Image 1: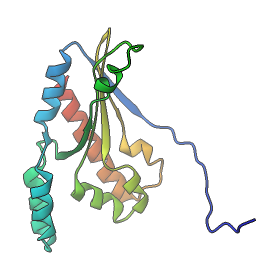
Image 2: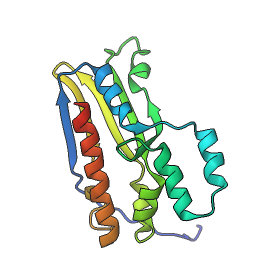
Image 3: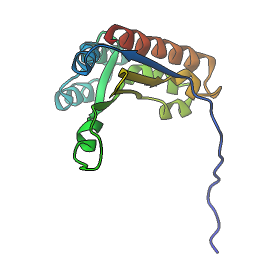
Image 4: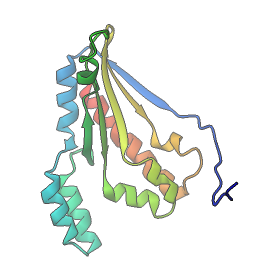
Length: 170
């Protein structure tokens, strides 16, 4: 029998999920989302920020590559392309966008380290018979009271940025 070096706790969190349904074409909605998101060349961006030691210069470098939503796409998963490979599945289009901003993340995690589990954010876009759906689980609700007042304010601003981005896409 080995001695435990750690402890695990479980907690249930109520999450506020925002969902939009659009009658616009899936491709147009996805394109509209892309218009508000930065999509830098990460090899070049990483080289640029690795050479920066000044915080003000770092924030400017991030702002330069962020979209008008203030967010940068870190990863985009084409879930629909995987589903379409299964001969027994009814294919549909679905994309999961994982986006964030390192400066926003720093603003939350400096006073609430656990906020690092909430950044970057995820927007799910999928198509069903009634239209194109966009889902976003708010960072401020996901934190369930674990954020400092400062971090909670940043999380609420982040949620509003994502809401504005999605509103413009639908």
